[in-house]
Length: 248
Image (cartoon, rainbow, N blue to C red; front, side):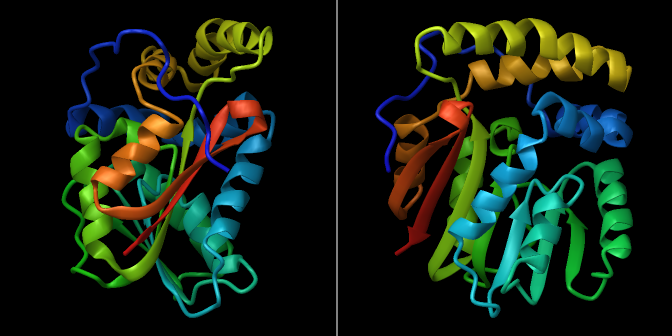
C-alpha cells in the first residue's frame, strides 16, 4: 500500500542537526527516553516497532543492522522475533542511549546475539554488502544528511537485502489532523519537558517532524538512493509511516 501524500504543506524549518548537538540532546534524555516513548505514544510505539520487524520477513538466518538504535528496542525485537535474527548490530552516536540499551540486552539474555556500536548513520562502521536487513526507527529525520544516510544503508546491504524505516507523519483525516497537531505541538512538548527535565528535546521533536518529508516524498528518497520497490504505509491513521524497500 502506497500513501498518496507527502510533505507537510509548510516551509521546512531550519534545524541544527549537527551530530554532536543531536547526540548530546539524546544523551541528556536517555534515562527517561523509554518511559516517554510509552507515555507519549500511549504504548503504540511497541506495536509500530513490531510491525517494522515483521515486514522484514525474517527466516532466522539474516544479519540485521539497526541504525539509530537508541536504547536498542528494535535490535532486541529483531533478535527475539520468531524466527529472530541470530546476529543484530545496533549503531547510534549517543553513548548514554547505547548504555541504556546494553542494560536491556543483558536483561533479555542477549549479549551474544546483539552488539551495540557507537557510530554515525552517515558513515556506518560496516563493510559493503555485509548485512541482510537494515532498520531505522524514528531516527532518520535526526540525521544531518538524509540522502547520505540512505546511500549508506544501500551500501551495507547485500543484493536483495531489505530495509524497514519507521518515521512520524501527519494524519490526513479532517478533524484528526487538527487534533493531532494540537497534541503534538502543544501537549507533547510540555509533558516531555516536565518528565525529561530537558528544555529543548521535546520542542525539537515536533519541529523535526514538521520539517521532514513523509509518505511518497520519503519513498522517492529511497528510490533515489538506489532502492527498488520502495513503499510507504501509514500506521495509526498516518501518525507514523512504515517505509520498506529492497536493494536490487
